[in-house]
Structures are given as structure tokens and as C-alpha cells.
Length: 239
Image (cartoon, rainbow, N blue to C red; front, top):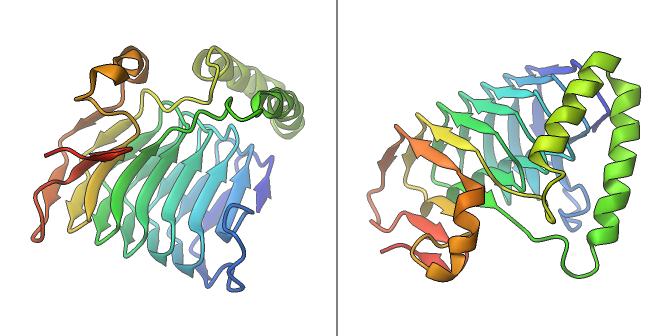
């Protein structure tokens, strides 16, 4: 784990067989996890055979670069950013995973030049409305704790920049959003689904989300020798 790290580098490591006891992966199960980490780099690592997630960042991480890693044979997502913003995921290879790259409730993330092969889903854009089910208090507590944690970890100027980003990307919402992310120049090969996103763009009932989301995808190459319906949403596939 990296907790409240600033300009941290994790490079050229082999991280295998995480969570071999197969505890519920939602309880931090997998290869590695970072929380409240800013301007850091994961580069040239190999993650393999994890029960849960491979490389996982969670909780207002910002300004990080995840590049040139290989993630494979992971039961959930090979690479996962959760409740984060302004991170870059580039030039990675992710194969034989439940999900190649997962962006969960995050904003302004860049996913570019990755190779995604034989995953259940190539890129998954997740959005849980965590305010429901009595979680609003959890959000308030998390926000207060996060500000204190980042203020201790980063220089004052970087903390103030992080706070401005937080106020623009996260604070105005009544749930943690998945919005303004970019998926560019990636290669998708034989994933069961290439890209999955929460909302259904063909359903008028979901139009309420459209003006807020603004996720973009362009210049990607999709190859699948097994099926043609490569794009999905929370309840199905586009035909």
C-alpha cells in the first residue's frame, strides 16, 4: 500500500499471487493499492495471478502516471482507478483479466496507447451512486479525512492545487462521478466487451446523465474474431 504518498515511484517490480487466501477483494484484495497519492509513477511492473485487483488507486489520487506495466490473469481489473481525477494510464498491456482497465467514479482520466487482450471487458467505465443506501455520511467523513491527509503529505502549493481540482471535479456532485475521461489510441483484441459504460445512450431515460458525463473515445482499434457486439452498458449490449 501507498498511503498519502507524494512523488512516489514504484518501478520494475514483479507482483504475483496477491490475496491468495481469496478474501473478498473489496477489502483491499489484490496486488497493490494507493490512497491519496499525488504526482507518483507506476512504471515497468508486472502484476499477475491476483484474486481481486492488480494495480489499484483509490481515493482522490491525482496527477499520477501508470505506464509500461503488464497486468494479466487478475480476477477483477488489471488496472483500477477509483474516486480519482487527472491521472494518466498509458502504454500498458492488460490481458486475461476480468477487466483490462477500470475507471470507477473518476474524472478527467486519460487512457491512451494501451493494449487490451482477451479480457472480460477491455475498458469499464463504472459509476456507482454511492449516496444511496445511507452512504452520504460516509462521503462527508471521507472528504474531511481526505483533505487532512493530503495536506500532511504534499507541499502547500500542491495541496491547494489538489483542493481546487477537487472542488471542480468532485464536490459539486451528490455522488462520485465518472465524467470527462478520455479513451484514445488503444488496441482492443478479443475482449468479450471492448468498452462498458454505466449509462445507455440509446435510452431516453438516461438522458439526464448525458450533459454531465462527457466521456470521449477516439482513434481506438477494435478487433474481435468471436463477436460483433463489442460495446455495453449496465443492462446489456448495443446491437
